[in-house]
Amino acid sequence: MAPKCITLFIVNKAGGLIYTRHFSDPKHLGVNECLRLASTFHSMHAIAGRLTPAGPVTGIESVEADTFRLQCFQTPTGIKFIMLAEPMISNLDSLLRQIYSLYSDYVLKNPFYELDMPIQCELFDVKVQDLVAAK
Image (cartoon, rainbow, N blue to C red; front, side):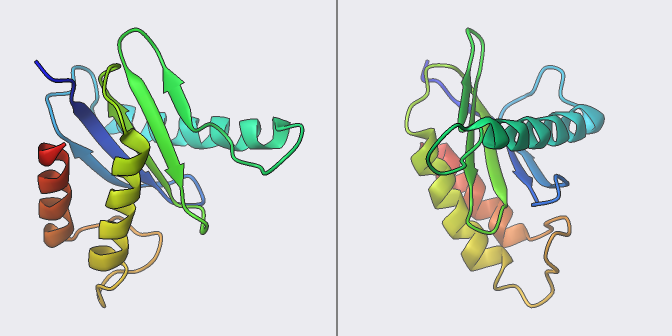
């Protein structure tokens, strides 16, 4: 069985969870757990960025464990795309960049969307689902 993506989180620059999408049945991820995970990761990302001794400030890009992999892609504007996946999945950074492209096309160009507010765009949902399913 091929490794798969579990959950996508999109976190605004203030650390607020603005989008969650489950691609498989998450075992213990209710709404509160998703909010907690997103805000905790945002804080850890910020702390890691401040601890970077030299070079560009990037923060945490990936967390790998025996049972999961967490990959983060941060946009120049501070939006974080975080994917929780099975540990053996590859090219998550590329997938997150493609999701960012979908976000730019279907969310930011939506005249009814307000920045940093929860994303409620059905076409974005469909395109993300199709992209992850093709992975």
